[in-house]
Structures are given as structure tokens and as C-alpha cells.
Image 1 (cartoon, rainbow, N blue to C red):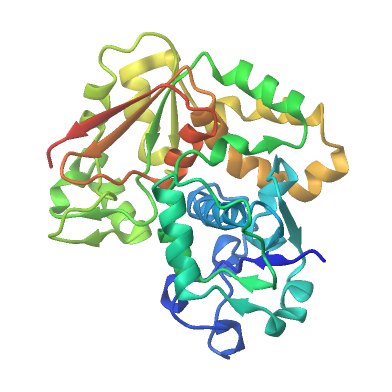
Image 2: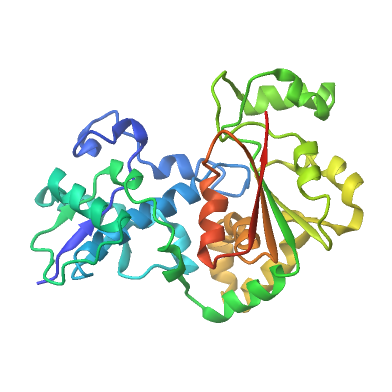
Length: 337
């Protein structure tokens, strides 16, 4: 009999609650991914990197049981499975996912500890380990499996699509500028580079969080990025969650026709996708392709450049997972804030 590890992606506020979906106040994680715009606005934070780390937790739990089981995720939590193939994993509808979940048991604390120890210390898995029941992976497990050797097993539904994307993006030096959703700052003057009118609009629109504590989500100015790229030769691709009005003029002034971004390459990537996906699929799932363009640019870059503050180790999960997909050459530029 085959057993399953069911992996509900749970919002952080509910990580310590068992069966939180039974609570009338519970909000599905997927409801934050795809608001009314259905993913058409690329500035929406779809938490793709965070969701990939969650899949990573499930994959390593399955590895603990010698893959003598199947992982189950909700399709709505990973619609990118239309393009990417995740081994030992199936994606099912929400109704089915919850239909018999009461019959599943949460992973015990002891098993969690053993999974963590085996994975993080790279201890060989006991070949006799096998799953003898259906289990649920608790939300907090995603913090226990920050392993970087899992993502290379992810494949493409169409391997030739990966070849085309790799060939296309391999000419670019890519820099990831995460400067829209969830940005933090300590002094409002960092936004002065936008000009008075855009600065006011940015603050009202983005609602950056003022904090006195170090944060990986700090606002890095254009000068931080320009300095990091000062010795780079060749075309530069800016992967960013920012709408163009907040960066393009300043970056084009710096790099001219050597600058590329999402809008610059969109038609070319759409043309590539149409070689593998039907018009019907594109019309229904275009938002999936839209969300992945910058991620592919990072994953298949000639060289990736990431700016981060010196006093904090974390980088964006979006760029972190992309660089680990095929181990793209990467330079981390540390700055003082």
C-alpha cells in the first residue's frame, strides 16, 4: 500500500495550529498568491521562492522515508507545476486535498527531529525507513530543511524548453532588485533618488515598513547596484518586482541599450513558450509564464549579482531558489547600510 505525505502550505500565523483549515477565520495561503488580478500584475508577491522552500521540506521528508511514499500538494499552492516537474510529487485539487485529511496524522516531534538531523548533517538515511501511515507535514517544517542540494532535481515538463530558456538568458548579467513588496527602511531619505513626486507615490503605494533592526529586505539604492555592476561587461538584465516607473529611467541612463528587463524580453519568451504550449493553454495560464520570466533569467544567467547587507545572511528566496536550480555563477555584493 502506498502512503502519502500531505503538505498544506500554511500562513505563518497558523504554523503551530493543527488542522487550521477547520477554523472559520483561516485564510488559504493560495488566496494571497493570486488576488483579483490573477497574477497578471508581476509586482504581486506570489511567494514563489517561499513555496519552493516548502516543497523542499516535503521532498526531504520523503527522502527520509527512502521515497517509499508520495508527496501531495494542492495545485493552487504550486500552479507552476504546469511548467516545472517536481519528482515524487503530485498536485491535486483543493477539495480532494482536504476530503480525507482527518485520517492523516501530523509528523511527530521525534520524527521531525530525526528528519532534521538526517538532512542537515547529511547522515545516510536508514535503508529500512519506510512510511507506514499517511502523514501531514506541519507548516513550521519549512524552517527545518534549508538545504540547497534539492532544487537541482527539479526538471521541466518539456526539457527542450529549458534548453531554449538557458540559451536565451545565458548572455545576460542578471541583478535581482527586490524593492517593492515587503521593503523595510530606517530613514526615508533613501527614497530621495526617486524624486519628490515618485517618492510620495512609492511610499503610499508600497507602504514600506520603518524599522531600526537589520533586515534582509532593506531598500538598496540604485548606487548600491550600480557600484556592484561597475566592472561588468555585456548586457545587464534587471530582475525586479518594481513597476518600471520606479527604476527604468535611472537604469537606462546608466546602461543605455545594454539594459534589459521583463518588458524587454517578454515577446521573445512568449514566442519560445508557444513552441511547447498551445494557444488555449497560454490564454488560460499566461500568468504562470509571466511570474516565471525573471526567475528563469536568474536561473540561466551568465552571471548573477545579488546585493545584500553585510550584517545579515539571508537573501530573497526568489533569487536564492533560482540560483540553486542549476547552480548559476553568482557574486554576492555586501554593503553597509
